[in-house]
Image 1 (tube, rainbow, N blue to C red):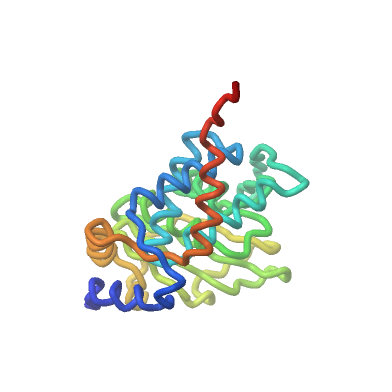
Image 2: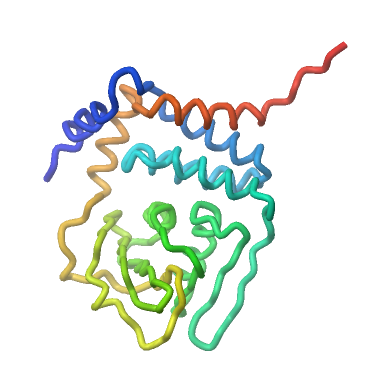
Length: 243
């Protein structure tokens, strides 16, 4: 098994010293929550999304980037809209404007895990944030498959998350194809864990080791990226009244 403590220390050197800043784990989560809440996301939804952002930053170093992308989508000219659920004969379709993986993913994951029918997130071609939420939602003995389809309805990428806390990337899509035609998007489907999968890229034990290290010593992030997230989080604060 890879020594995740050593791996973390190696990751910390990925950014030049002048371009990084060390943060407490709680600071990453709190800033993500404040930034999302200030952008109009409900407190409950912002809290769950902030947990995903924190996990992605700790283990994949892309949580803050995902946060910034999500807020940019929320503040686009189209503006946020409600979630719609459409039930077709073969699949449930969950749509939201913007179709944010960070915000729409949890609803789709919970729905897929509660039934035998698959759930489709149309036009969602990056399911990374959805998979990180699923790590905490899949129950022991179960698994969730996430398959991304291109514009021609062909599977191009797949991830499997298990109730044991393992995440498998780049799963062979040939084994996950279905007879149902889908357009571009990500399909979620609950399924028993497959025995033929290769070594997971993330395991529960490795994530726990990395988390404990980050709690003790902090986590490094890109300074410029963090500055943007921090400014967004400051909007949560109530401005002082001027006399």
